[in-house]
Length: 233
Image (cartoon, rainbow, N blue to C red):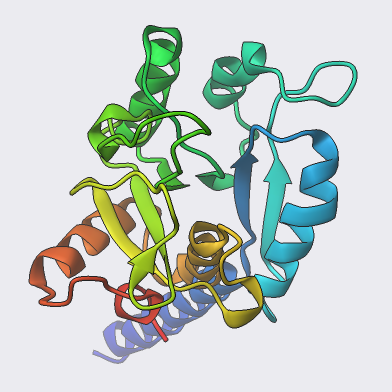
């Protein structure tokens, strides 16, 4: 009996130690966002990255990495986008696209690649996007992100519960949120949400976040869920 009791105590001790180590590793692991834009390289360095650094607050383990393909002059090059998406660095937790646009035959391959990434368990965050100058308004269902199943699409509210002018709109959106006051009316709502998600990322398994958001949306009676509704405060 003594031997059995001792073995049980040793087992409990080893199990507890392993559990503590596992929790500590989860808490300390880095959360790296893969960033895609259609702006030039300087825009990431001078605008997107500094904004993310402010939005992530004290999260030392939250990082954003620029995966946008560029030409030799530092301008956005659509040519390498799908390839970059198919072969991301291993450490990427989820993707953030800073744009959305009208779906056409030209971007069918991108929509397919995005769908494959989501299906494989990789979360994709994107803004609703706005119609281009001279372009008539479109439902969200006719955009790249709207046609990709289960992309987390975030609109931005300004003023009196209004979305940014010319925003694409439709049920494909998860919600629309207000960016912090310093970033209001700058199309930073989706990046703010991505930063908040990065801060909370390790509180759930990566594969659980999509279903978590879906359930939150279904159960809520609010028109627009805010970041606190969708993520831990």
